[in-house]
Image (cartoon, rainbow, N blue to C red; front, side):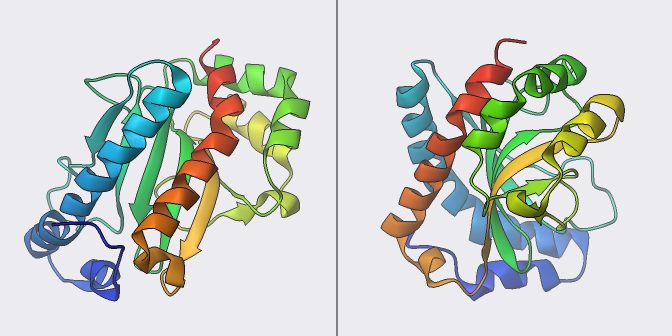
Length: 206
């Protein structure tokens, strides 16, 4: 498969009933696209960061009954896994694509990273465009625009609440024409990652 963009059929995957049937559709429709664009994006990040970045595709292996509501690729500096490391994501819910720099609850140094972010609040505040989004839970669709968010309160919650997460980036509606344009979509993802690199680099210090 050559990636030409995401289609409505990809988003319709999340209306398929049953774990096995939906997983089969994810593996056939979406994961080949993830492998292709993920390889390009990990190469882009490796070049920008001067260190090897590794592609991971969500396996949803823990699921035994409920089918996944979303799926994603992740890019991290660790070859074996990504959940315990700061990482970049591209993924789909049934109504949008998300592009995240993600810090999820499995991070062993979550508190230290949060404290580092709070200590460098002005860097985060000036780096994040106001039309980017903030999410505190990677399992949910809900996200708020940075310009409408209390960023300091979100970082404090990220530090103090065990299950709280911190994801920043973009959400693209399923009907946005950019999703069906390979070059434009990849350029958007790369620009988003590049914008977030100062935050990613800061988090590696902790």
